[in-house]
Image (cartoon, rainbow, N blue to C red):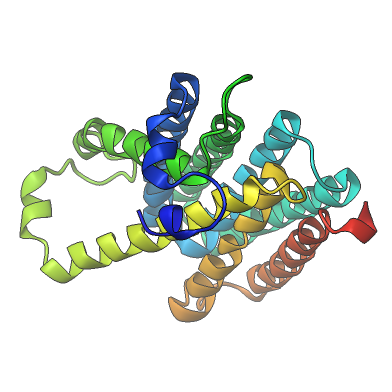
Length: 280
């Protein structure tokens, strides 16, 4: 209703949403459902393994899956830089998982659970973006719906899947803790609810910007999605430097973390350069 209606190009949000083809709506809604389930699994992985592990492993894998599949949907950018960067990120994933195992050498079962949850979340997280790219492409003979309309239907998919997915995971928690019910949600401090709403608003604003960039001819969905995974480095920094999740880890684990940051940064830099004209 704001950014989607105040610009000078394209249809206003309401007009774009009203004429969005049913095929694009279904792709966007399905993308929202898959993303939501992946996000819930990622939160469980963070609970088990910590922010510094779950994000680099889960979202790093999502970058690999999402970049490759999105490139197949709509190729754009220098493939050598794009997939070279993805390969560097894959190395960073392995290094991060190895650092986590060294930190948790005395709790192998917990280590395995955290990494498995991160990997499953990563596969699903990498699967949703090609559906969004397909929705943005529209159908032959009809105008493309645009990023703001697609973001709206994507959010509808998130909303529709939230209640059943949450109820299932509350009854059968994946983090190994006892089942919970809605009383815990209702009794939580208001500041927690506000923090959740604020986090969702920030993420959705970034997602809309990402969808807009994906529609640009020069950038394309593969590069846009991959650059968006720079969020992984921010979250890893929070886990390592703010929450100090590796403060008591052995020196070898910290060395692996250092190389993880280096490879992740190099990989994202290569992906960021992929759409530039002088590299194509």
